[in-house]
Image (cartoon, rainbow, N blue to C red; front, side, top):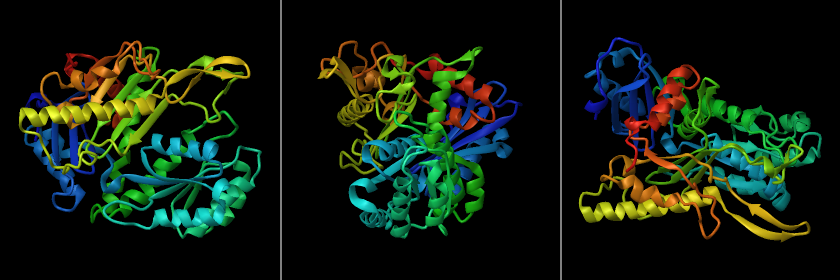
Amino acid sequence: MTDPASSSVGCGETVLCVDVGSTYTKALLVDLDTASVVGASQRPTFGSGDVLDAVGACRAEIAAVDGRASDAQILACSSAGGGLRVAVVGHEALVTAEAGRRVALSSGAKVVGVIATAAVGHDVGARLLAELVAPQPPASGVDLVLLTGGTDGGNRAALVDAARAVAGSGFDGPVVVAGNVDAHDEVAEVLAGVPHVLAGNAVPRIGVLAPESARAAVRAQFLQHVIAGKGLTARGDELARLVQGPTPDVVLAGVEMLALGIDDERPGIGDVAVVDIGGATTDVYSVVTLDAERSDDGLAHEVVAPTAANRTVEADLGMRESAGLPGSFVPTTDEECAADEEIARSAAANAVRRHAGRSRVVLSPDGRVVERSGVDLREVALIVGSGGVLRHGRPGVAERVLGGLVTADDPEGWQLPERARIVVDQQYLLMGVGLLADRHSDVAYRLAMSLTTDRSRVAP
């Protein structure tokens, strides 16, 4: 339904930001002059079996209050039909395969499998990938393969063997190649007949992770090959024109805008973490300042270097699926609400700890050193909560669910925020911010900054 509290009639230009979700399609009408949400609507994505009908219904509902929605430009993202399902095929599990997994997650994908050909060989790798590719309803199979292997100038055989595994699996594309650039010609021959794109190496040298080129390629292949081919609508070409990228990728762009801003005159707020507690998964996004002490002459101590922007998906921590509840369940009594909050608190706590990792003192040949894993969230200034359990919960729900994540002295060494403030993204602003970031950057910035004000309904 349209939110009357956020709706008004104006005369400025508007944009309709839409998330075609796996369960619900959500739309925000943004006034570009005031950088504010002036209308909102939510409809079941598959109410008619055609997702564009849900988009049209959202537009019509908002237009009944603000006529500008009738002809507003639509910018959309999508996670419908299982979102973007990626299999990563690499050489060594601890290096290029892990780098590929992290690139895929930051690109908005759900990683359904990671295959390291150095451990199993390309013949077994092909069989394992063939098993992943075989679709089994309701939402399985593989939409895209991310192929990694080798550092630039290194052994070309690593990437070529991984490509042979893809070719032998019967997967018919698309494939994003993000390995040793010196092996591109040989890989292109192996993948002849399979739609593929050659991107920059995700691991150009040991200790360096360069995800930008691969992320852009994954996004482009998602738009070109995946969206129109999922059977979400009879008007696939129209949907492909509207969708800008996978929903998680768009949300991460919104988080980056909030954290980093645009320039010196429009700065971000610093380190940020977002906890999105969903029915099937709990996603954690973060943008943090990298610790210079973890580098040596520009090379990170880790084999795969840390990155500033990160996303993890915990598929065993969903509000409904993990609890054995139907996705349509809505708590109605105080007892049910209390139980829902406890499920959410546990999901958030476990997901954030997995994302953050921990620091501990260990003995090495060089003496006592601090060993860290995960993303160091200790300097995070703001935790943004998202998900229906927080948006529609009882007063104080954010503090009860997320408050335990802020601690200055975790006894187990988890790298949790020490002094963060907690807010709830009540209007699903980060989706809108991410969609507007490229074409209307100043509007996106102002919208992101509104999350830090009273308009975001700061948790008590």
